[in-house]
Length: 286
Image 1 (cartoon, one colour):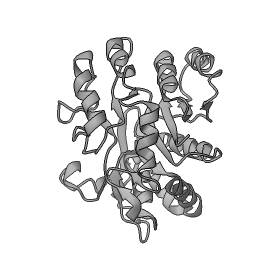
Image 2: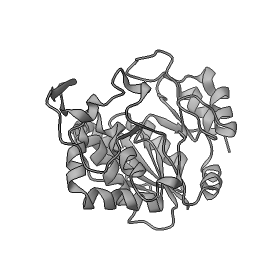
Image 3: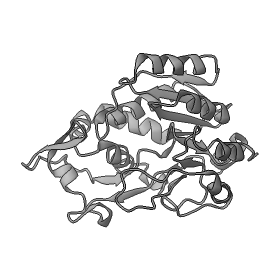
Image 4: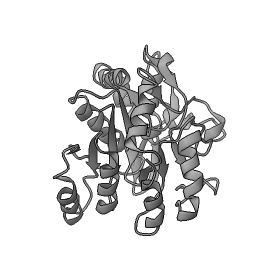
């Protein structure tokens, strides 16, 4: 057993159950958004409760662009660290699906003991608009009904911290996972600051990781295949059966789609009800 996976989910219980089964025997920690209707949550419980490698974790309200998403990730990391025997914890979504087998994942992680995979970039960055995304941290923000609410008065910045953007959907070594939780608890002022940046899930984890003493152990790669055909689109492409060959190759040889990765372990976004043939093809990878 060499890996743990934190899955963030809010819909499609059957697909999430299929994903968790594909990840066996690795540990899987599933976070179900607390705003999910009781009937849907109960279906998650029914499908997952008898899977010995799966744990349902404490729920948070995970509104888009809110701190609740980060809280869910931290909850998953905290839960995973109660288990022994794994070397890496990877955060994925309920619409991800493996491109390689569980055994191949074990082989991959065994090559990178002590290393983390976190795509990241220092602010300001050309990826985030005319001011390089500095508005995200310069002002106090709060998402409100899907819109950006902010106070246009510069905030006092946390001392000694470099703002680092990236994705929370990353892979941390066990040591780095401990560092993230330790930092969160020992630096309450910094943690509080990031609760009110714009889209904290694209800032907090990467900032913590790259401001720790273990930053040199980080490999700046993305282990998930995520395709954005339309620049500026709020969602990546929905992957289909005709993408199967390209995805399997990305799992074998790596890809630059969604950010370079020497090997892509997962694909996003996949929807079982529309493209079950794709999942069937990926399940044949052994």
